[in-house]
Length: 303
Image (cartoon, rainbow, N blue to C red; front, top):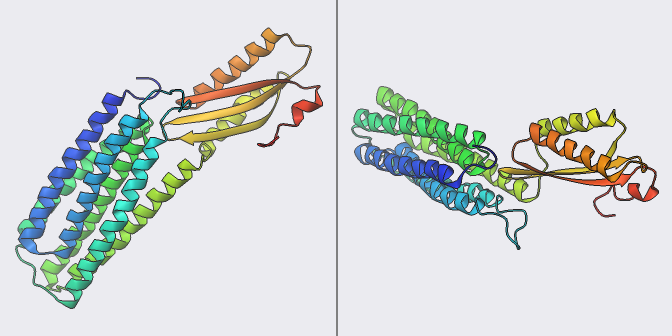
């Protein structure tokens, strides 16, 4: 599969994430019902966030797959940033709910019950999240879908949160220190607040037309350096990333005595070389004569 992934293929993975979220909500809810643990309650609430995020990812993947039209000439790929931003907001709400429940339990301690069975159920949900999360991350990276990758990272955060909860509740089982449970809940709340912040930051930077990653910018410079040795010059290089698609524009300066055909052949080769080092990219070149002083007046964004 080349270029942007087929929307049906990405949607299938989003549906898988939805199914995993529903299953883990049931498992973790059962674990909380069996034990009364705030730590396990916080874990179940985070799975509710996973479900909301997976539903949003499915919706935005479908929107991002729409072809460019008259009013959206650059396509809809930025829609995926709304998915990760939505997840970040939901995580903040879940963290507040977890912290409130944990503080209430600290003030009103409650003995935990059937910890062994509850932890076994929670462990099964954790394994499910681990498998699906890793699959989503690998698929998102391979098929240039920030929505799937963000959903996978969120699931992996849930995995590590669950591992922490299970380990700490085993300590409660071994020591009988009931106050460890609400402290676990507060720790979970702080952890997922950090995840929410990173998701919101990534979404905001994407909507602000952030440049492509540093390694890709270096690869572009290497492509241009190769052609500089053949007599061309370059300026006004600009890049931006829109979720699964990148955009590159550059001005190419050549001797004015060159024929139009020769200049055209050069920029076509430059565009091909850039597409080889950056996946799913749109390249725009502007050809100018190097001898004309006006060619150097448009190096800045606003001429």
